[in-house]
Image (cartoon, rainbow, N blue to C red; front, side):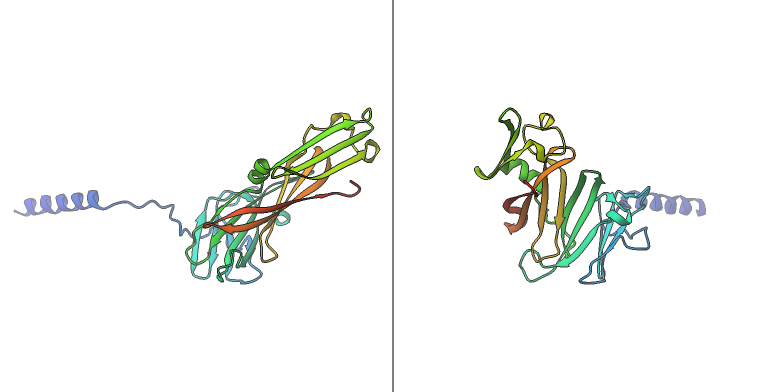
Length: 242
């Protein structure tokens, strides 16, 4: 009788273990591993960003904390002091409630500065859809670089949304690099930077004719429409002396 009772109890335990679902450990509420935050929002010290297991100056996931709310995101970037993430806590969509704005540096070096933008609802910890500046530039901006007057003059034209907004006809002597080696279009892939110090989110995308020769910047302003952040107006500003 005792053996039968033991068999019945074991059978009940085994069946209950099979019926109980096993939840994954990678919960969106994972606690930060790093004790000191990578960034603290200047507007509210309770809004922080932590790196999870940073290694060799990089992190591959991060925890965003807003008061008692926190969530792990699969963001990756630099954890070095000079290129650490920027964090803001302000109303950037005009609904009267502040959002967490995270700017992460993905690459930094000579002639290269690539950043990534994330905007999160600080109450629900859900991330908004955000159009990347690089995608907007690729879709809406065209340019032309050509040598004229027996290569003594460099003609540059920038077209935004189908309208030519800026032209430059600089002398070849104004350039550091050899104009004969210039690209046929401006290269906007090396410098993409974001800024959220004002009430609106902005981006700067620099255009170059060679790896070390930048001739101007695209200035992008974000707008919030239909539940997502997308690039609105784009303007081009030539660098001095161009």
